[in-house]
Image 1 (tube, rainbow, N blue to C red):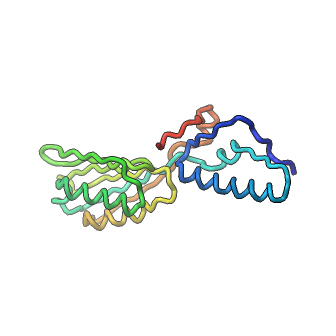
Image 2: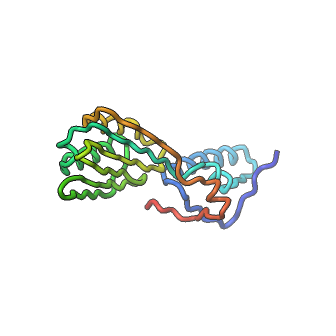
Image 3: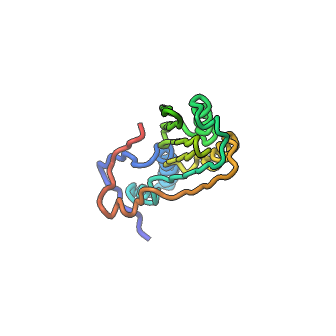
Length: 184
């Protein structure tokens, strides 16, 4: 078995969250220290590790809440508090928030998180709320946060769906892998 070849003068800027990148750098450091201690030549192919990191850019989870307590769905302060608490429960890092109340009723809001976003749209006239979590951090506790939202809105019924977003295989096949870190 041959070792991978070192690519010289390569600046690595991750295309995935910096937490994941830091974890890999820790593993690389341990690997390099172990290799140096055994006095073997240190070689490492960073592109190989980065390409194996993620199969997707993120995951989208959509929560539909039916039969919600009507007055909650048109209370902008209640919704702000609920979404910020949901972000906290999910272990997200809040960056910004924006909520808008429509006339005569309904609210849309976004909590921008380092990991991506949490959105809500309410239809008080139908006792319904649609909530969307998009995250590029698999360590977030989105399901726990969804359970909290189901309870706090007193939903009679709910529907939860998730799917992957941003296939890395397609991105790489099309040559779209960039060396930029968009999470700063």
